[in-house]
Length: 153
Image 1 (cartoon, one colour):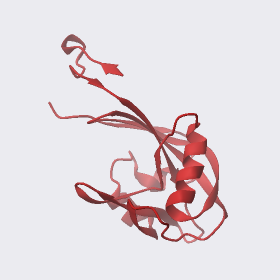
Image 2 (image 1 turned 135 degrees about the vertical axis):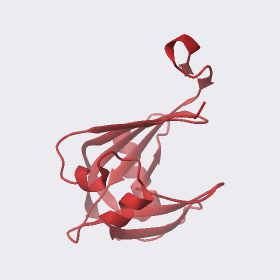
Image 3 (image 1 turned 135 degrees about the horizontal axis):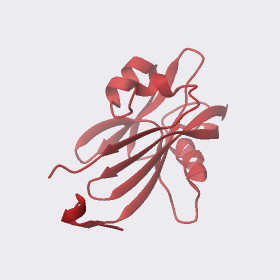
């Protein structure tokens, strides 16, 4: 739980914690695998991934979510980005490099995912502008980027 105080510049609320893992999967054509999610606010594109279930590591979360959303089996590599989002929850978001290990990308029986698509990096960056330096910077990069998104006061 996040407990904030006004004097420290933090939110004066407690938010439940959620851990989220995403996979950045690119192909030889320089495309990135994306999923389109149906949200209460409309459609939202993202990398494959989702919330950690009890007893899972974030690496296990990424493997499970990628398989559930796209049908792909992936090998999970290093951490590419760490972010936080404070809205209805305090989400810790970790994006991992991932490589194809089997399967074919296709729409699965996931009620929240309405499309699975390989798209050029430039398109993916427009759909997901929150990664500092963009996705192209992260593909094959040895370092980790940090980003955060907070509630407006």
